[in-house]
Image 1 (cartoon, one colour):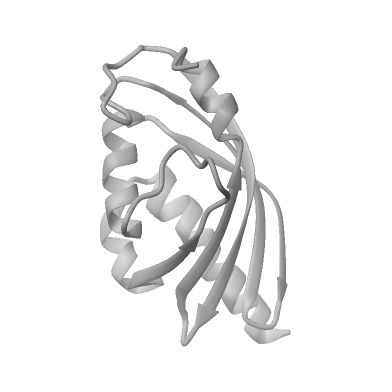
Image 2 (cartoon, rainbow, N blue to C red):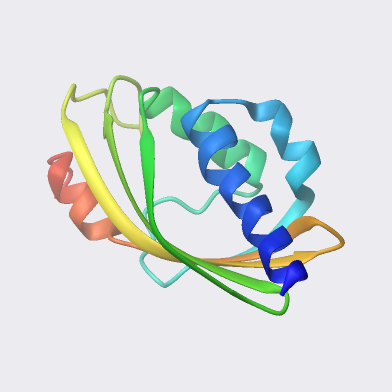
Length: 136
């Protein structure tokens, strides 16, 4: 039980300190440099590293704000159900800014080892995001 709570605390730091507070320095504390990603086919954005994902996302959506709706932990895994809203004020996927407000939601699974995120499964509505940005 204590390990599950500790793992949830790491994932909460991911959502709140990294993304909502825009604190990139927290990455070294909560994740290994080469987090292994698992994206569904057709995922719009598949960054090579978590740090690159964070940095490029903030260029496109600097006001992104996540809400954590549910979290479950068991063993070395934490599952988060989340949503976000953001305004596209910078380039995204090589496209000019739209100025449009977007919303997305998803479920991520994190694997924690030795107090750090080492693996992530990401499931979000990429098609819906691209439609909101009028890419499709």
